[in-house]
Each structure stands twice: as structure tokens, then as C-alpha cells.
Image (cartoon, rainbow, N blue to C red; front, top):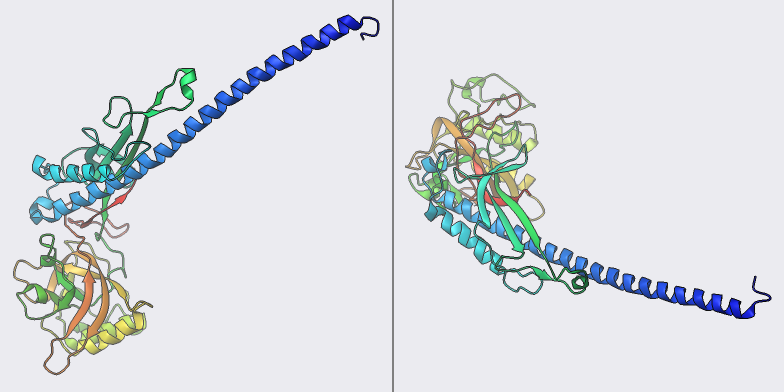
Length: 393
């Protein structure tokens, strides 16, 4: 209490107010610095997002180009697990990464550049989710994009952190894209089309087509054939895989005929058919040979009943071992893969016109020698994988 010492009281109050003013000033400065640092951190996070977008784009484009490089290799080279990508094969992949990076920006750099090693080759383990750098039969690329000291893009400048002695910040982003599985071992019911296409469709980058026909044989347009999965005529033309009317039969004895095939298609149409599992390079399907025009009406019904609202029927078509002639397959034939197909129309015989299937065949398969087992079924010697890269990390 300062009742009798007014001068002393005034002095004390003035001192307290002075201290409060000093504290307020310090707090204001501290808050201003914190606000400035927050702005710099926000700027760094925004730049990080921009770099991540760029890294994702670089990984996807370079990975897809790597898939195209594989597609243009002979099948034997595609399947050689010990084969290194040559420098000539690596170059277009790295160049695609450089081009994609240059189309992206981050902060005040309008066209990003990759450092040496910004596109790195390696293998991606889908189970362990790990990336191992290697040029020996890589299935993935890792892209790194940086805004850092010593790089072409340089670090990002700070706005306010300079008062704390921080005038620049390093920011980096990494992404991995891998070539995913396109076919490989298929579980029961996965392969759901009563016709197949030859592996010759997948020779080179332009082997696939938009039309499936069954003649003339020996040509790309006739590189297809009818099959009855693993059925045979020994069952009295009654499909053993049809739950509505199972019968005998088995894999390896009787041939295939038009009546058995029509019965299989009708059972597929009714939703009562479960196709067998497929182990690429091991499984054999029974092919009929010939055009079998009488089956087109049944297939037309199957298509009409299963197409979606866009008029598309999405199916998995087996890819059979076709040699080099595109000859119409007949009898038990090895299945080496399966392909994704979108059917848009089935054209039955009309006068002298050719019966055919209008479809988009996804040109996204190549073959390698890595086993890939189905739990409870086993594994085969081949495993087709897609050259269309997808982000995995």
C-alpha cells in the first residue's frame, strides 16, 4: 500500500508500466518472428507438394517408357531376369524423366531439372514394399526432384527466417513407379471369355488390335481362336465346370466341338460356369479350330446380357502360345497369359460377311520368367506384367 508515500507509489507504477511495455515489445517481436517462420514453413510445404507432384509425374512417365522399351524387345530378352538394360535402352527412359520434370515448376523455378541419378532403375518388391537399385531386369524407377543447395534448381529462399540466420531451405521429393501385374496366375473364374488371342498379338508395341476375328488364319486379323477352357467331348458335350448340369470329362483326352462350345457359352450366360485357374506356361485350354460361325449367336446373347450401361463388356481373354504363324489353334494349347479386353459388339454371320468381335485389346502384356504362385494352386514359369507403370511409393 502506498497511502502515505504518493511519490514512491507513482514511481513504482511507472516502473511496472515500463517493464510491461518492454515485455510487450519483446512479445511483439517474438510473435512477428514466429509469424514469419510460419510463412516460411508454409512456403516450404507448398514447394514440397509441388516437388512431389513433379516426382510422381517423372516416375510415372519414365516407368511407362521403360515398359515400352520392354515391349519392343524380343520375348526372350523380356524374360531374361539377368539381362541388364543397356545404356541405349536406359537413355530414352531418363530423357522422358527429364522432359517431364521440365514441364513442372516449384516455387520460383518454372522448369525443374533433374540431377544425375534423378531417375534410378531398380526392382520393386510388391510384398515387402522395398526398392532395390539395379539395372538387371528392373521393374521400377525411382524419381527424385530437389530444390536444394548445390543443385540446378537451387534451394528455396526464406522470407523472414533470415533474421535467425536461415536464408534458404532445402526441399526434396521422391516417388517410385513400378510395372504392375497384367496377367500372371489367375484364380478360378478370372478368365471368363470362350475365345483367346495369340501371343503374336503382343509382339512389338503395335501388335495388339481393335478387332478379333477367327479367319483368315496366318494374319494378324485372324490371330484368335475359340476354346472350351479345359472341357472335352468325353463328357457328352455337358460342361463339367457348369454347376447347372455338371458332367464327366477331364483335361487331356477328348477334343472340342461346336456343340460343347455353345453349351459352355450358354452356361457362362446363365452365370453358372466357373472357369479353371490358369498357371501361365502350364495350363492348357482345349481349342476348337475353325471359325465356328454357329457360336456367334450364343456369344451375342452373352454379350448383350453382360454389357454395362456404356455398352461395354469387360473380360479377361486367355493368350495362347501361338508360335509365329497365327494359325488357328486346335486341340490342347498352352496358355501363356491373359489380357484385358473391352468388347463393344459381337457381329454374327450375315450373308457372306465375316463374323467378328469389336473389342479394344489392352496392349499391356509382356512375359518374364519369374514364378508367381497362386495360394493352394502353385506357380508357373511365366508371369506377364504390365508395361503401364503405377505409383507404389
